[in-house]
Image (tube, rainbow over all chains, first blue to last red; front, side, top):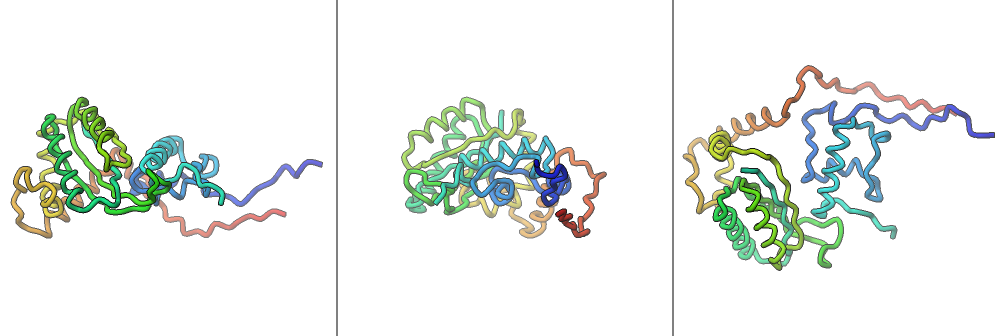
Length: 80
Length: 171
């Protein structure tokens, strides 16, 4: 009746991207890096999807929020 | 002394003279309150992610400076009053900055950036010898990148994931 228990959507990269490559710095002034961790609607992608570690997700969150404040990232993307 | 960074979005219709004026005014403000400008960056015009004061473009200026907490309070107060400022954000980068030590450390960095900042910092301390226009830049950059990953663990060499991730498509 219910859906099969083993329902696997396509696998995501499970490694935190910022741990894997220490040369990338989380910086609110670089919206291009941050943009890949934001949905099309402008929401922050959760850790379970992005695969970030807790430390970097925290840094990322503040960075995204700062970037929103200086109009580099949208707060929301309105539906057209 | 604390180190701060302010990103300021100015009216895009402002002529360059006024921008110059603005940066000078605020560097003077920083210095009059016992602070020191580290760098000023002009990022030029950028498209905004949302409308600010009914405008979709803005002129971004970055101030990097050290000073006491009173300075930032005064600076933010002034920014709020100033009409041409559309939006701003100040971030504290460092809690304890020893100005003298910091100056010495950033000497070579300053040398590399002297050319770039020459216009903006004309009134400030004379650039430490504009000799070797190419070399110190590289050295400074190398030093910068070496410093950058604070407490970085060199042990974990990132293994290039060349293995194609095969998607298991069940059902």
